[in-house]
Length: 397
Image (cartoon, rainbow, N blue to C red; front, side, top):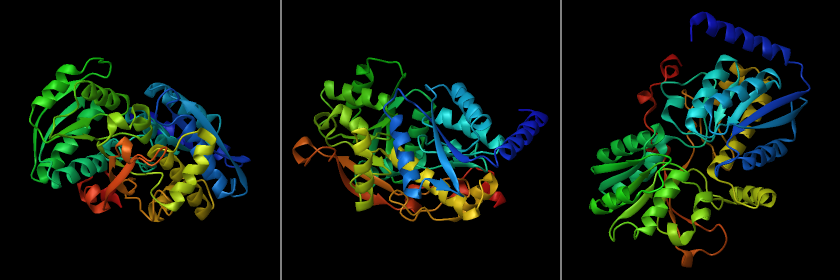
C-alpha cells in the first residue's frame, strides 16, 4: 500500500476510535467460520463465558459481542472487520479461524488502530514477517505444533518420516517446520506426497507413505484435510505395522467425528485439553451445557484472549490500543489456558503445549475421554528462540 494511503488509513482509524470513545459499550468482534468444524457458535459461547467471568462490564461500560462468518474468504473477512470497526466501534477482533484470514484481518485492523488476537490460526507469519504492534497469536502456532509432534516423537525413536502434505501454504509450512525439527533431533525426512484440498481419492499418496518404510507418517495439514487422510489410511489398512501416525494439527472435535476406532493410537499436539486440570473441567462443563460438546483449543483460546484483553483494558483504564497492547505484553496470562504464561515482543503467546495420544475405544472411560497426555513440552523447547524471529518488533523493543 502506498505511504500516503496507509497514513490516511491510520488517521481515519484514530478518528473512528475517538468517535467511539464515549460509546456506552465496548465491542468485541469474532470473525470465524460458521460452516466448519472449528469454532463458529462455540467461539461466541467461549467469549460469553469470559465476559460473564469478568463481570459483564469494564470501565463502567457494557461489553457487546459481534459474530461474523468469513466463509473462508479473506476479502469477506476484511469487509466484516471494516464494518465492525467503523459501524460497531469494536476495539478487539478475535477468533480469526484460518491463517490467510487472520493475516489479512491483522494487517487491516492494525492500520485502523484495533487489536487482533488470533485464536484460530497459527501461521508463523502472524508473529514473523507480517507481525504488527497490535497483532497477537494466542492459541496455537506452527512452530509449537511441529516441535511438539515431530520433536517428541523423533526423540522417542521415530527417526524416519514420510509426509502426507496438503498442497497449500499452511501444509507446506507445517512440513517444512517439522522437517527442521526432525533433522535437529537426528532424524530424517524420507519424502512426501501432496494432495489438493479438493482431492477425494488419496489412495496413491497413502500407498506411497505406507511403502516408504518410514517410522512415522506425518500429516501436514489441518481439519478436513487431515480427516480425509486419516480415513483413507484406515480404509487402506492403516499405517504399516511398525509405523506411527502423527497429526500436525487436529482438534478434539475431529476425533469425535471420526471415532476412536479409526483414530486410536494417533499422536498429536494440543494446547488445551478439557480434562487437563480442575479449572479446565469446570469451564468445559459450562461450555458443554450450552453447546452439547466440549471446547477445543480454539474455544479455550477465544475465552483466554477475551478475558486477557478485558483485564488489560481494566488495568490501563482505557481501550487505547497502544496502551492495551503494551499491557498485554507485560502481564502474565493467568487462567486455565495460559497457566501463568507470557506474551513475547512479537505478539506470540507462549501457551502450554501437550503431546497427547488418542485412546483406543476400550481404554476410554466415557464421552470425550479421548486423550492420554504423554508429555507437557516446556515453552523453551516448543517455541524457537525469540532472536530467531523475523518480526521487526523484536529489534525495536
